[in-house]
Amino acid sequence: MNLQERIHRFDAIDLYPVITPEFCAGRDPVWVLEAVLKGGVQIVQLRDKFDPARFAAEFRKLTCQFNALLIINDSVEIALKYSADGVHLGQNDLPIKKARKLAPALLIGVSTHNLEEALAAEKDGADYINVGPIFPTKTKRNIRAVIGVKAIKKIAPKIKIPFTVMGGINGDNIALVLKAGARKAAMVTAITTADNIEETTRQIIQRMGARGLEPLTPCLSSKYSNQLS
Image 1 (cartoon, rainbow, N blue to C red):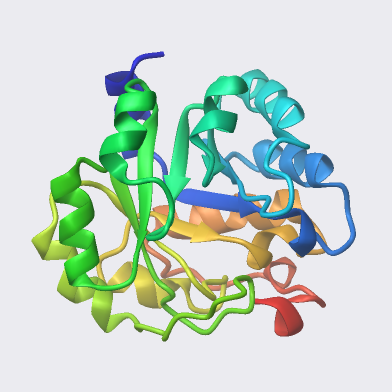
Image 2 (cartoon, rainbow, N blue to C red; image 1 turned 90 degrees about the vertical axis):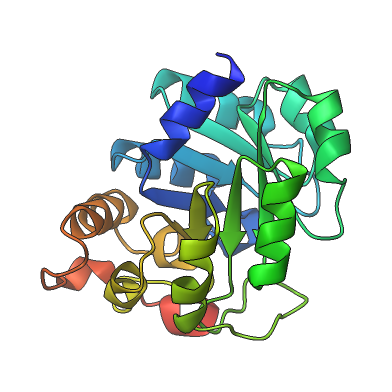
């Protein structure tokens, strides 16, 4: 798959699960991956800060079986080694232009936290950006200031590349980010700690397709969500 094909596939995604081994409620991350894929997602990011390679081969195998994109967090080297579809970079990771030189066929996503960072990432050649944290979250060690849904309204009209939103998003507040102009939401614990991951994934996708207007069902809550989301 070339870069343009990957960009086309990315344009069509809605829910973007990010699977971090430490936020799987003690369950096997590969099992969690299979559940979200069965739920209908078309893209998954593997974010493993301790060892980005330990689940990469199994993630690649499963995402290929389900015809879904695989994004590796932080490491261009691991993304290339395991034939991933893209790499997601933080503000302190490898610069976009260097990543592009090393991996011209990979999607390159960048985490941004304000309009200035978003515009800079677009200018430097990112294929998509992530905006956040929208709501409070405990899934990152270095907590950034919450930017709120107003940031979506500010950033969305100013950039031309696709963007995702992230940070504390769950089934209860996703309507707010959709109404603010987001069309793609990255989620961690709202999915990976759910009691029924497959059904939760399926219902969030349906909710996003209806722009977040239909009522939630009980399976979208998790006994783990209060302590991790």
